[in-house]
Length: 238
Image (cartoon, rainbow, N blue to C red):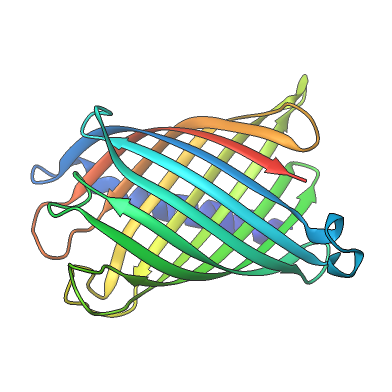
């Protein structure tokens, strides 16, 4: 358990270091608001034989340019298989209309994604890991397929005197695996560090609200993005 805690601390520290260019003069800062609703659950209700199969339904709306405009929408459905009580494997599709400040030329990105989820509970709370592999396309912008690997670690620790509430921290590192003709270049892509408060409405419904720092390496320009985000998440687990 101590090794997992140390791993989380190391990744979180890495996120802080990666986000340190916030002080660089050439970086562009933006204040954004992101809203997310994600529902997961078993397909057993449709057919008992599908007990170990799960669904993933996610919708996001991201408001950029100082939260004044809808800059990105994300629709991300998926199907998963429960390997055991702690682990599951997933695959799915993503449709992502994207505008400024994430791009100068608006486009509709499409993705296929696969991921491995691991989670467990300890005396201090819940620890989870998500490893996601993406294949990305941007029709009308470029013809290449972009391959990207993402790794997130997350910890949620209930408050002793108010167990419905929890302190939540996560860090996710993005790595581009190849060069493309529509912007992504191999190497570090971005890092997202989140700190917030979670609240359990009941066993199936939870919200997590807090601050996220997103640092994006724009490889085709010397000006990178440093986004300060109000992140509002609703999680439904049936």
